[in-house]
Image 1 (cartoon, rainbow, N blue to C red):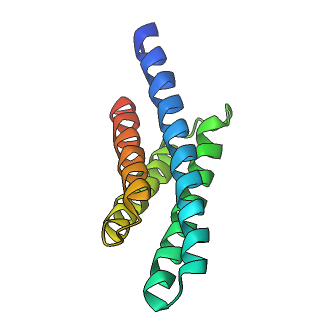
Image 2 (cartoon, helix red, strand yellow; image 1 turned 180 degrees about the horizontal axis):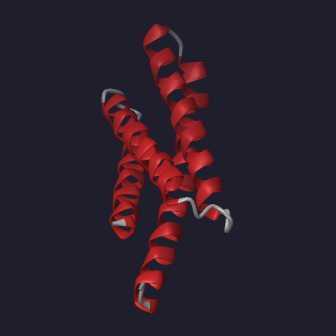
Length: 121
């Protein structure tokens, strides 16, 4: 049986993960729009990564915010996907001198995803 403390931790970590996903989506979308105006092909990779990361984080946040989304396997899969995309995004943004904020947001989101996954067991 799950204790009330475990339920609270699950909900707190779920909320923290959703917030981190929202922030990461915001920063990555902003980074993607900046990359559109900066020019050549090297910025195209940043733009694509920003869009992908924002979309995945947004989808994960929506799933985490859905009270009916209690299918643990599906939830785990989506959060693991988000964590992986964020870590890849952080790596790509690290290569850009103006990508520091996006890389930081991606790492924070990946950490929040990991913390939430730990509550799933």
